[in-house]
Amino acid sequence: MYLGLDLGTSGIKGVLLDHQGALIDQASAALTVATPQPNWSEQNPEDWWQATISVLMQLKQAGHELQQVQALGLSGQMHGATLLDQKGAVIRPCILWNDGRSYPQCERLMTSHPELMERSGNLAMPGFTAPKIQWVREHEPENFARIAKVLLPKDYLLYRLTGAFSSDCSDAAGTLWLNPATRQWDETLLQLTGLTLEHMPKVHEGHEVVATLREDIAAELGLAPIPVVAGGGDNACGAVGMGVTNPGQGFVSLGTSGVYFSVSDAHNAAPEHTVHAFCHALPNRWHQMGVTLSAANSLAWFADICDSQVPVLLNRLYESDITQTRVVYLPYLNGERTPINAPDARGQFYGMSNGTSQMEMTLAILEGVAFSMLDCQHALAQAGTDVDELSLIGGGARSALWRQILADTLGKTIVYRDGGEVGPGLGAARLALLGHRASQGENVEALIQAYCPLPKVLDTHQPQPDKRAYYRGKYAIYRELYQQTKTLEGALASLF
Image 1 (tube, rainbow, N blue to C red):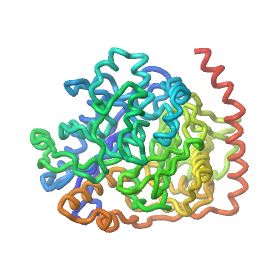
Image 2: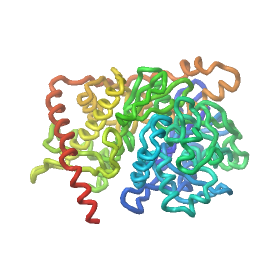
Image 3: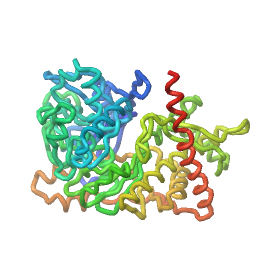
Image 4: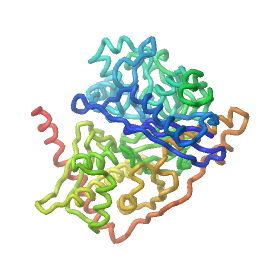
């Protein structure tokens, strides 16, 4: 068997595969996010570790002989700044990918160091790791002085599991310290935030074996002292899990955040279009992404304030037969990346009346997130990227209604595949399989083709021509709504 662990924002998932790469079982444990101040988003790394233990105990209690696991791979939320001191202790809570406090640091970095965009291939955005460290440097100098290592979230788990400091080039590309063309740290970029190579883990390809599980940890978790591969960022691992491994392939992810992902055979940077250009978790491959920060998170937020649950809201909408609404929703609960790069942008409902129902507001959320994905599609198109058919992953992919709205909005064929809900965890387990087999002398490219296929199609959604006028008109209003109200957001924020 092979094990993949995916450290997401809302929880950790464990995925078991058999020797042929088929899914055996999965388990998960929930996580919470702290927001001690507006625009802040943090987690305690110890919570990640306890959730990891919970996931493995669940798999063990389900009757799986974890001693038979032959290799472990890790996936995780990108960009988080996990700071360790000389003794390996956590200095402060991890600053997460959706934390917006470092926007001023981004502006200063871009103004003072124009070489940053050229060397990293990306704009400085608050979600990325480097501006977070610059914020710590300016606002918490005592913590900055204690930093011995900066780790991404999944790489902290790898450290706890093995004692090794390691990352992979797909996750590391989201820090702004990696040169995606060379797939290694750039010392010049590190110096911009007062760091050196000594502060960083070693960078590997995602399938490469980087360490062995510590014997004491293996005994505690019920595993053997197995090899651990470098793994990958959640989106790159999601692509591996969905068989999106070759140039021209793409997917849309409806997780906590939303991602529009396309594979390329070179590092095609397009920062002027707010497109992320990163390394893939597989060798000799890169990818481009557009990102919206509150996809399924928008539904979870609305369900919470309605004292309900997401499946209940979606079922009510389905049973209502409501297919159009005058309500427009901007999904900017945590700011936005593509295309506006505005951490202070805020979510809105517009067009409500006394007769507006909960179902219409739910529908508006589904549409608003689809429109944010259309923003990403336009940004990628401006950067020269076009994908005819999109696979769909993430928790939001379970909704057939949402899948159809995406197909109609994007004007693309949307393919829902088996394993789409497993996503990054499946990819992490596949990387473990690849690494284990490659370490025994097998050809990596042959292994990728054999063990990273496109999963079985469960459902296909074609754009409906009769919906085109509605979504085009609604999208135009969606775009104009932000432009008309963005100055008011600053005025509102100034009152607090």
